[in-house]
Every structure is written in C-alpha cells, then in structure tokens.
Length: 151
Image 1: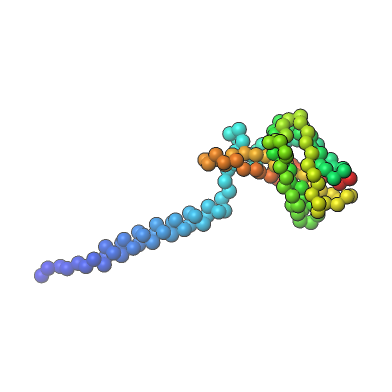
Image 2: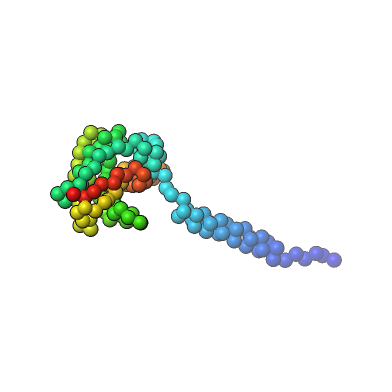
C-alpha cells in the first residue's frame, strides 16, 4: 500500500512562517514610534550637551534678551509659562543660524505673555539625526532653563 501525503503540512508550515514574519514586522514598526531617534552634535548625544549650556536671559520692552555664556551654540529658545503645567507658549529660533559662545541675541516676546508674569526660558540646540543626516532642533529639559520675570 502506498502512503499518500497531501500538501496540507507544507501549506500549514508556509502559512505559519508567513504569519510569524508579518507579526514581527508589526511589532517592529509599532515599537519604533516609542523609541526616540538619537540626535547628535559633534559626535555626542545632544542631551549630554545640555549640561554645557550656560546663558543669561532677561525680558523688558517686549523682548527677551539672551547672552550665551556656555561653550555650546544656542539655536533658539522655548518660552514656557510658569505654573502647574509649564505650558509651552512658543518655540522660537534666532534670526542668525545660532548664538555662539559670548554672543547675544533678542527675540520678540510671545503675545500670550503679559508683564509681571513668570516664564521659563529653555534653550534649544541644533543637532543631526544619527544615521539620516537631517538637522533637528532639540529643546533641553526644563532643568537647564531659567526662570525670569517679564518686565
């Protein structure tokens, strides 16, 4: 008697491998959105460069004045209203490409900010996305910012 084997075990194996590959792709693309891209500047993670940022800021006459005292060029600032949630009201870039060490710049105060209101100035740095070469602005943590009173 001849043993007959059908194609069903082969088809089942192919389907099992195909489904496994599809599930792996779904998990990969889903998890990619939770893993942030690495932004670098001068071959260092840009988050570590925030520690080297030092600046003086003050506000009067409808402007925010910034003097860079650190060794890292500042690309811009984030202006946050001081309060329970520290709402970001504006992220503004400087007119020049950046404010280098020892340089000063000014930015117009956002219209949402009123006189005698406390705000937090958070520095922004410009880095490159690792592996892609595209430039991207990065706002440092609020710990590296300065609280000022709008005059």
